[in-house]
Image (cartoon, rainbow over all chains, first blue to last red; front, side, top):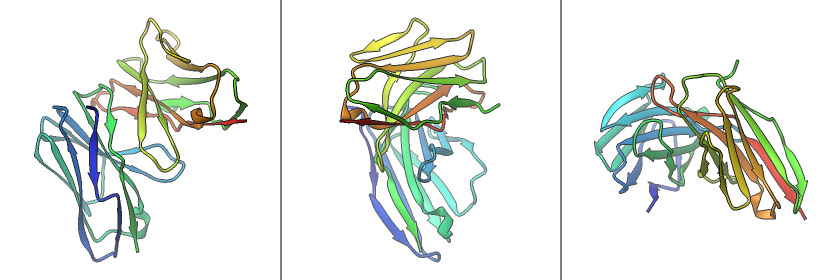
Length: 112
Length: 110
């Protein structure tokens, strides 16, 4: 089973809202990732968790806050977003760093 | 030099054609190599890993040339369903993450 699930599929939020994106995998993978993808661009890495510890933060604004409650779950907390943050947010997992990554279907976020 | 560079595309080919995508990478310490495909408004899906010995999966053949830091993907007998964006992905950087190329769009026409 190479399934990564993400909720919600779509999210519309105002600039003053607080919301969270959720990601789950049950493949025993020890690395999990958040990416942001704009139209016609490749995925852009935001955060990497390795063995439940944040190992990479690619200079992402503090209005994005990741959380890894356990080895199967990854959250992305959103607060005071800007319209330019509208994008597809992808979660991925991997057995270990540098191994193949499996992506969830993404959350399509619109900030109004 | 960009870390992972791909043919800009788009590639517009008729059904049944053979099409080849090329990719170069800048970090000679890279350890892992992949091709992903991404359909419009969907997530990237792993197509195949790429090994030094080359590997084949049905109509798809991937090759790696470490000396030239070059990766290729060959698709034979193209199908309409092969229409997608193909992403060249390289791992093994200092931070252990994957580096994505910008992708090459393929359109297979009837």
